[in-house]
Image (tube, rainbow, N blue to C red):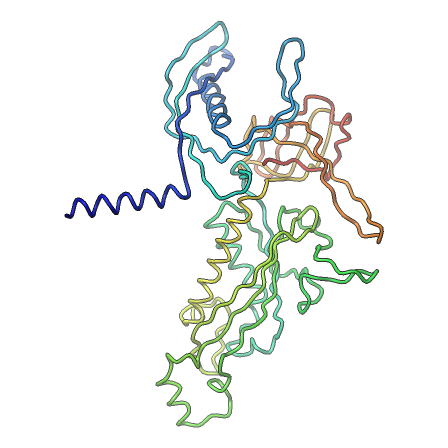
Amino acid sequence: MFNLMLRFITTLLFSCFCLTTQAITMEAEGRALIFNKDLDSARQAAIKSASQQASLQASAYVSSTQSINQGVLSIDNMQVSSLGMISNIKILDEKIQGRMLWLKIRADVNFEEGCAGGVEGHGYQKSVAITAFPLLYPAQANLGDLSNIQTELGNQLSNLLNQNSNLRALNAGQLSVHETAQTAPSRQLSAGALTTVLDHTRQLDVQYIVSGVIRDVSMHDPATTAVQRNILIDFYNRMDYRSKRHLRTLALDLYVHDGFSGALLFNKQYITAGRWNLSPETRTGFASAAFWQQDYGLQSQKLLQQIGNDLSDKLRCMPFSAKITRSDGQHIWFNAGALSGIKAGDKLTVYRKSSFFTEDMRSHVQLINTRKTLTVTEVQPMFAIGRLAMDGAVYNIQPDDVVMAW
């Protein structure tokens, strides 16, 4: 009976796991030139080439524009949407043919499901700025002196993301990006039209901008913390501390904007409540040790964790992009490097950035795919250099254009 139950539990856990991940075994070949008799380096390069082939063969989508030049196949632009992570690599065969090392591998390609179209950003670390969360009703924060929640919430959220996600979150808690909290994220243009697009997003130099508005931090029953009290009421409140009368709300709206175009990509409202049992005179502030000890602090922490998970899930399915900072002939500099997971040999697609105006004179940013691939040749911590097949001037590549990986 015990063995039967154990088998059932094991099967159930395996089934749940398969809902989010799956793996297939692939065989692929790779080649690499041998330089200065360095066989180990050539083998590593060949394994990397074979691993990429295995991932491509198992990927959900491969789209490329190809051309033949003197019998050599060249890829001008390659767009790969693959969730494949390579593991359990085994070399099945290996040969040296002149200066070329050839090998064949067998590997498991693990897929993580959940993104439409297979977009995964190749595992690069995307940059996010967490801005201020202004209070819609500042007087509600007087209880407990929680007015610092407007800046400290962004700090807590950025720390959470940096610890538990593949996002590089920058704390911009002192920056308020919404002109009016009451109507956020909407704002009125000079011509009278309404828009949810953020202005001046390029100054932050990040891929995504997270902002929000705190709509409510009030008590469910304001009488429990009213100043006009007496001894009997105080005694009753202390004895009745588990009652729902002591619940305090935390409600906020979250907005995620694209850092290049300012477009609103995601918005959601979050609401929680927890018991607030401190006296009206107690001033804990938000995110202090005394604050986290309260049930209200615990529920707030859970809400922040939920927000962090949602941001990780949403932005995980977004493409990786970085701004081009310099163009010189065939070489392109862009502002993402080793800290973002960029490696020599990586390939990214180049997009030209342009602006256009609608009939009502509203400005929009457009990214145009040049269908040209940039191969990374040099990587520094905060930036990288890549090479195009032809002079970048031919494609009119300029600073402020974008490189992107899907």
